[in-house]
Length: 264
Image 1 (cartoon, rainbow, N blue to C red):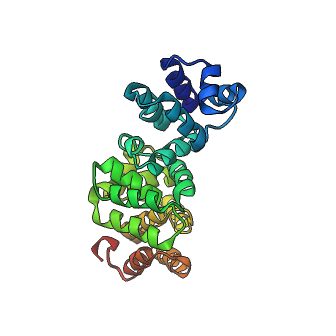
Image 2 (cartoon, one colour):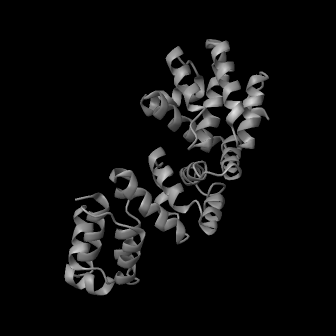
Image 3 (cartoon, rainbow, N blue to C red):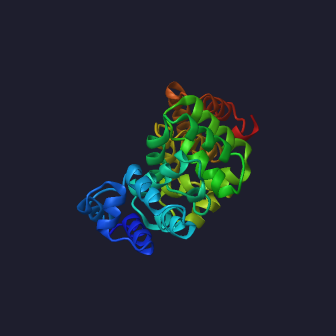
């Protein structure tokens, strides 16, 4: 059983509904509902919305369905993204407020809400207010929307918001370098990249799916440019030819000129 399926089943049984009863209320067949709950069929936003409608306004049951952290902590990226996208399109940020989401989840959410103007407006608002984990999650999703302007907006948040920057940079270093979170956090603040790590971050400069990760790679490479100045500059020059985000172009240009991307 998937984590999201378990949550849906728990919400249904807490409401005292059988599979047949939920099927009648939602309009889906009993077998469809059963397959969603046992994880053999994906829980789409429409199914989640149908459950929410069937459960009414009982806050305890709705919190089981929509507010659980199990989705974020253990659910597969596609199911997590589906649940979070559903929340965002309904103007709710609950699932973004407790745990930092993964790169894969952010990509999935961006793919689902990237054409939704209202959802993007909500993410933009959340990226600049609330606690740091909400701000970094919102910025992380915006950074993966395939729009240079939206990507630049996310990068501007990273550049100006120190708390968000530290969380995002740590996440990028942990993912790209394959190191534990604590080690990545230390690298984010103190530097000290090996030649292999410099090479991996140079490759991240061409990550077309994440404007924020490209900016973080630029910052980290600038800090450790003395490790291999020639290789770092060559990577930055190559990235400059293809970069579409104006904020990232400015950051790369600054790094090549020997100026910290944080000071532009």
